[in-house]
Length: 290
Image (cartoon, rainbow, N blue to C red; front, side, top):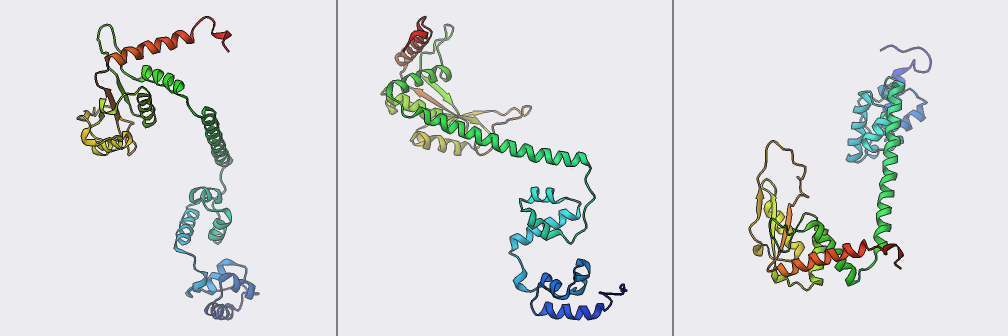
């Protein structure tokens, strides 16, 4: 190897000094400061083959991040891209890859896209927080429920989600089907308010045959506080291979079917209550109420 005259002309002499310092436990930065070698390529050549002291080694997790950062840098990634990909601070990225060659400068359009993406991610985070805050405030506005409020809410809920009698198909029976556990909890609380005994209530799961049927049965049984063995036989939905199902994954538990036995009279009262609510809400003097 040949070297230009001047500061680094006595390369072998500098190397001997650098090796001695390395073996004495010095870091690259300490050797650089001691020997006034500010060229990273030459500094690395001076200590080539000498392992770093133990105290300079980072924990394995940091080592993995560092190696990944260097791989990405060698692929032409910028500091911004590496920082976003690994979730590291800019100072750490700079420390890990500063000895590597700089990638070609991005075209202005690419820079604009990256800046736009970061601004949009920031905007989405702000929107998500506002959304959560609105929900928290709205939840607090409800407060407690008196029996009449729960009663009216339950009637409206059943008329929206429960089975209904038709002139062409008489079905005067209380049957409620839903996949939302909170809706199920509210409906059961309403039945309790109406003093419907739980022994007069039956349960059945409806779910796709490819799902975790046993897990779903246990989930719904735990939710309603019943023994899974007391559930009626689960209804399995056949899968059509031509359709793409979106209700998949661990959170998919099908629907729970709740049936109140011998409930024709209760159904008729529910229908009457519903139309009573409609009539009260649409009365001509609604605007004058206090």
